[in-house]
Structure formats: structure tokens, C-alpha cells
Image 1 (cartoon, one colour):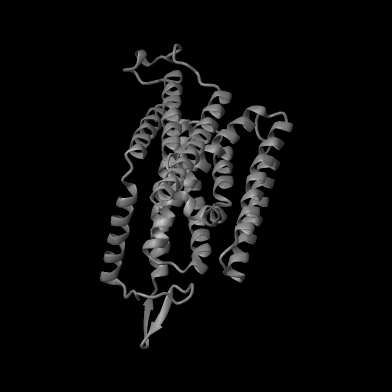
Image 2 (cartoon, one colour):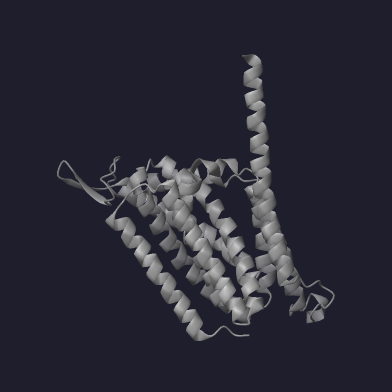
Length: 334
């Protein structure tokens, strides 16, 4: 079943209005959101995503509803992984907490623009080059392996330091912030503030994550509108989630293993799909490989939800056990 054009336009219009409203709210009243405020907004965006899936289902399009839900869960788990890097960026550049909302919102907008470009490019590649699924599948398996042996946080620190050094050679950059301004006056001399460097670093980070996430979502659905919708709903509310989770991010120690499993699973699914639509002459004589297993949407949804749930619960249980053990040790010492 094709998704009606009116539904696509209406969804994108409504979400654009909400995004603009969210941005204006930040610009008008920069502040550190409370736990209650963050919880309300995160719940609101999760509710919107689930409502979108329900509306698709009620329209009689259960297949696309399942694909969207699985894609949204995947992108949401990847976006939470993004937050670890955002925390590092904010910490390294000592961004005033009052202005971190603006930085995150700019990062989200950059991410949406970059992902829209990658989604359009991916759609063209899939339409004309069926063998691209082999590349996507291999890339996701590689990404999963990299996730397990994660050194990217350290790489990000090196990359950010390189950016600062490089720009510092050509552009006068002041060491201190001037509110949320990108430029400031120091002894009559116009200089850039660290805020510009933060925006550039966020943009580069978004580019890296876009390269990782788009093949993952195309492994679940090849409908460009659903691909973008899953990314849109996953990124909306990411700003509030940053403040809601806060220091809890480091306590989700097993989440990266859940994300790695999801990426490896989707990579394998893409490889099997590539065999089904195979046209490469050196594989099965250029014929489709019919014996390759076909992974259903319900299976994908179950695996993705299970991986997120298990890794999150495991993190909570182990943290609680370690905390209990530490308290017991302290009481024994007393």
C-alpha cells in the first residue's frame, strides 16, 4: 500500500511547525530545563511517534506501521548513542549549561538536513543499484564491530582538538563565551567565540552519525518518507532527553552492545535481501538467490525492541547490584 501524498505532506508540515515552535521557545527563553519539563517533552515526542504508527495502522497500512516502529526504535537507540558524544563535546568546550539547549537544537537541525540529503542519495542508489545492499550490509556489520570495541570517544576528542588548532591558525578565536554570540569584541578587535567551534564540531559529529544510521534504517524499510519520518521522530526530543538523562548516560553501560547487536542484525538482513535481489554476475550466475532467509518485519521489530530492553535492563540491574555491594562494603568497614 502506498502512503497517500496528503498524509506525507500533513505529517511533515505539522512536525516542521513543532520544530520551529521548539526553536523559538529556546531563543526566547534560554534556560536549563527541569526534570519535569524534560519528561513532559520527551513523553510528548514519543507519544507523537506512536500516534503516527497507530494512524498508519488504522489506515490499513499495517506493514508500513511496523516498518516505521522498527525504524524509529533503531534510530532512537542510535540517537541516544549520539548523546554520549554530545556530552563529551559540551564538557570539552565548557559550554554554559544555560546555552546547551541552543547548541543541541542547532545540532538537531544540522542532523535533519544531512540525513535528508543522505536519504535522497540512498533512495537513488537503491533504485538503480541493487548491489548497494551488499555494501550497506557490510558497512553495518563493520559499524557493529566498531561499536563493540569503541574508541570513537577518544577519536572525537582528537578530532575536536585538531579542528580547534586548525581554525585557530586562520581565525582569531577568543577563549571565553559571550552569551550565545558567535562573535565578540575584545579590546576593540572582533573575534569568534568558542560557540562557533562547538557548532562546527556538532555538525561534523552529525555527519558521521548520518553515515552510520541511514544504511541501518534502509535495512528496515526502503520507503524514503518512512526513513525520514523515523529519523525525524527519533531526533525530535533529543534535546530534552539530553537533560533528562544527564549523568545517567554513563550508567547505560550495556546500551552500546544492544546497539551493536541491532546493527549487526540489520546488516545480516540487508545481506540476505541483497541475495534475493542479486544481479551480480559472479554470485549465483547473476540470478536471485531464493534459498536466502527472508526476515519478516515482525521479527525485526521483536529483535530491535528486545535488544534495547535487555541492554537497558541489564545496565540497571548491574548498576543496582554494584551500588548495593558498595554500600554493604562501606557498612562493613564502619
